[in-house]
Length: 79
Image 1 (spheres, rainbow, N blue to C red):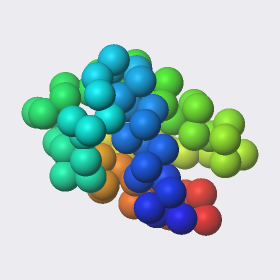
Image 2: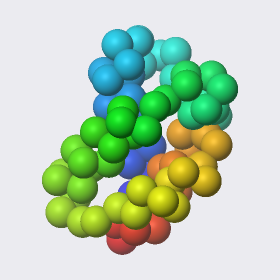
Image 3: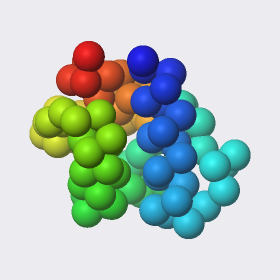
């Protein structure tokens, strides 16, 4: 499940930031590498909540540094 969420998280992040998916990976730092804004993250979370029919705690995601850490947090809330 985590790998699937990681893939979707990269996909959605790339689309929202208008960058090529190949420039992102699990080790991409959300804060320093791509400077993902809270509104952008909220949009991604909203899409994932709808897709997985769940509630994702945004406050827990604020502690993630990398896309992979975010995917792990999301996976623990989805499963």
